[in-house]
Length: 268
Image 1 (tube, rainbow, N blue to C red):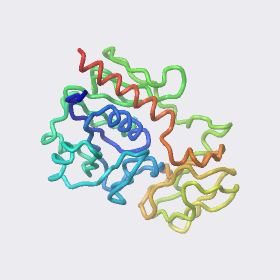
Image 2: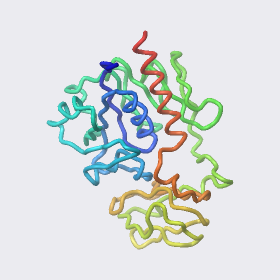
Image 3: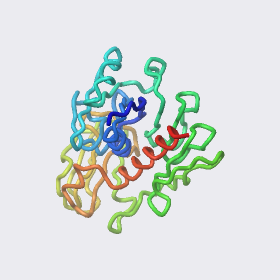
């Protein structure tokens, strides 16, 4: 059975966004991804955003290709792969006219999506309020409410605490931050097993070292200019190689929630 499913535009191509895209694409929805010229993504192997740097990237069988705006319409019609468009301001929406817009950038503040951008706008995580800057909110915080869809007017996702979720007893220390402004040059690659103190990258002659022994699960693209205290990487104490190169349980749970929201809206 062939379903004529509407176009979905996803703002952001990070690992959580890619979990959403994976669910939508597998369900048959045509999807377009909008990204920055230099995506600030750390889990690049499992992110659509990598296509901005490499031109073409495959995540769990889904092909992402960077394209120019004048090619996007034909790419959408093919449905064989997912186009990635550099369009941080979402100016292409006027041409694409999607039925659904998903803001998966996880910006948490200073949000610029709104309910006028598409008939259905779904916002992921903190900062989104149902009926104000989106129609539906998906909870992104791990715990009992992860993946719940919020439709009630005025309700929002859980407030961002600024504290990373603990993994094997490590919380804030597992997230790597830039010590200063400058260009990042990597000394390690994603999937490397590191000992405490081993160098991961240098930024403006300052070194970033592993705070504990673990596997490098994420690192921002080599050669990108970063700012002081910006998130640049992720060290995983569980040291499971496969976790570095597959979509996470959290991303797939959030993707399932977006899929639920879209089908619910289509029925209504």
